[in-house]
Length: 506
Image 1 (cartoon, rainbow, N blue to C red):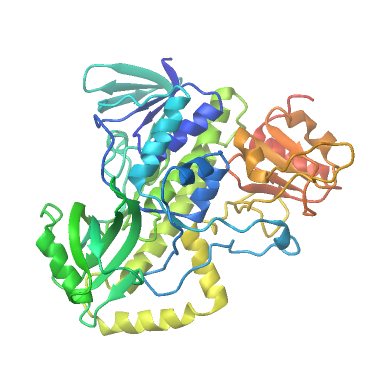
Image 2: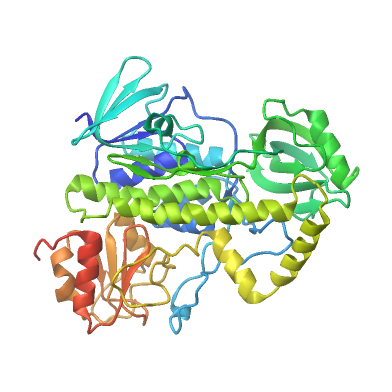
């Protein structure tokens, strides 16, 4: 083998997979067909769950220190309702023990890609650019990838993270069912005047609409914005260039003369396509990110969904390469993330309908939007929507485990070290800091499960300090896979075996 894992596609999804593999000590090659990184911002919002993912790998604080990435609010279908980023379920009586969730932030995809590429390079992994995949073959032992320049690479596994027009997916001939794009809208990186104090979403009485989102600043410190707009007669073919005149006309239709276009940096047309592959796994080849699912980019769920695919897959591939993955662990990637992708496509399609983004002015849609807005005022409804849009509502199935409010959900952060322990100098530490090893974590607040967990000590770290909460077993990707009692070591052993393989001794 030339490498353990070949990752095709060096966007946020591919780089996140690569980072997880490096953390697991797995030889990794990251290849991309483009000769250089794209300058387009593309995505601009980072969900709470993705920010937590970065924090769990020690990447969040350096990212936030590297630029101006303001806190924002998520939305559902452009309704003027700030959504909470708290978990969808309140685990009583432990709620007070956990730290608040990270708020949504505006981080342009181009900035995130530059940051992740620099982080990987510091670990010795440099992207192999100008590598266009043209063929792949797999057998019982590995995958052979052929590139356009005649180079060939042999790997034990291959991850296709090469975008919505994925070559890997095409070569696999995987089914890509769903709906083709029927309408287009405009997304542009711009400088505007007259936006100070404006809300994010706006709609005119005749059906024209616009969304304005912060994108940090340009090289001269001037604020950039992501502008999305649509309305009657504005659905043009994707290959028609977006012009400054078109943007000015759209701004005037929504804002009159208040908002003016100062500079157009980049623009493109996006569609309401909604597709998802039939299978995320094909033997030794896996699909992730836009290679597995494409949809209208609403609510920052495209890039974020890909990063969550990568975070789910990375530690499982690492376990397979290192030889301790239990039966079914790699298959659980498809089981968990295909369902998550289905739920995202469902809420995206619902949002597209409620937004009436083509500006058709259908009175039935208008009435539905008004009723939905009234429902969204209810705390439980807003909380549910907040969980969907923040990424914290995804609950993975956890077999053979007693029910618990956190089971299958991503765990919020909490302090795990008691600073007042006599005769011990324990500095402050958080649960997310323990997850930075890329290993599982067992929270054992009563210090009663050491013997039961000892045979998995090479894969799971245990802490007996922390807030008064129930014992929790947390996977490397931050999801709770067991919640029990200190007097239930047998169920803990079962969960450890299911997710972390056979015991190997103390």
